[in-house]
Length: 500
Image (tube, rainbow, N blue to C red; front, side):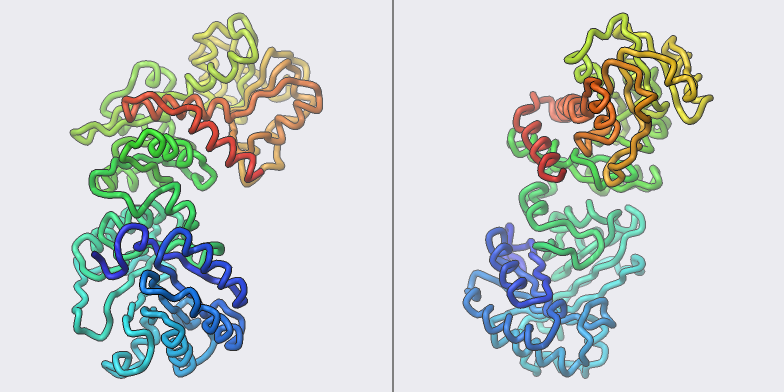
């Protein structure tokens, strides 16, 4: 058993609020999911609120609960403006309230005499925290904290600017004892979720407000990613893109894994440079991944093999990592477009305009052309539009001609209007001369484009239909099992409606 227990107790809920009442409310929420809680005393507005909170905390103290008191000074990245003497006094009050652990930042530790903390009445177990909010520092190969030393554990929390940065920190955790490894920032998020698997003593997750960059909410860490259950036998999948924070793919696929009892997890990878991610595949143990903007075409040159249709489309959204480490690519966007549109119209013989010429547009164009549609392409890059139109035996249409042209359906295959920029439409009302408008964007479920179309009395198709269909196909490619479509659909639709 580790320093903080086992299982979900290794997930440390972060409680941070400006009032004692807010802190106590968060403590109650935290204890429903874990038995380890960090108390950010520095977030409380005044010493009076801190003492009020600690006095009321006593009724939540029990042998099965570990409270970690933290009163981080501004010099160490916290909010506390008092001096070290006041900081230690508050930690003493935390000990009296029942806290068994305290977090002392390196900035304070350096100013104290050797061995001082073992004699001062702070909580008896000491976590020394080292933060770097700007970069990943040079790291030793391993850290072993002596059980009889000045501290009981060391925490290294550092910003990962690249995926390689986060891998370096996880490797230190793997070979160390009594270490807490915290990769910070959006790029470091997958490593943060895998840290417990790699040997970190704790993984931090806020109950409400994030206290460090790249944190993920307690509910998601425990329920969606089940980070405390991940082992070396867990198969890792993910989505790569930039941006990727909006993606509901983790919810879709992790719901499928949980429903079918598959020992796997699906993580969001913010990937700016494709090579940075590809080099990390063996370190993370990745078995497959989804590809989204802007990497759907660039990934092709890194594949050892590609299904013929995906090669012809010239875009891949699904990759399988084979046992020898080589990459096999395919395209399930193709399936998603057809399934979504076939419910609304007869595709054969129809005239369809695709707005855009990127990876998603290419999949849609080939799918519709093969199904017998007459495909037109309109894009900001006229050369790309003409090139794609030639490839599918269609025609390129200029933006200026749209008000005078009529189509059976218009598809938006650009990211314009995607969360968090919901108020923008790629096309105006007078450019929609058609019976059906489909937006490949699924978040929000009802985009500005679809609102404009509905106001004109045009039938609409949400991108969520395509998203679900292509996701089911991906899940089945990776697992070899039938996707639990009803459960996966329910989870995604519920999230979309809750967030809208």
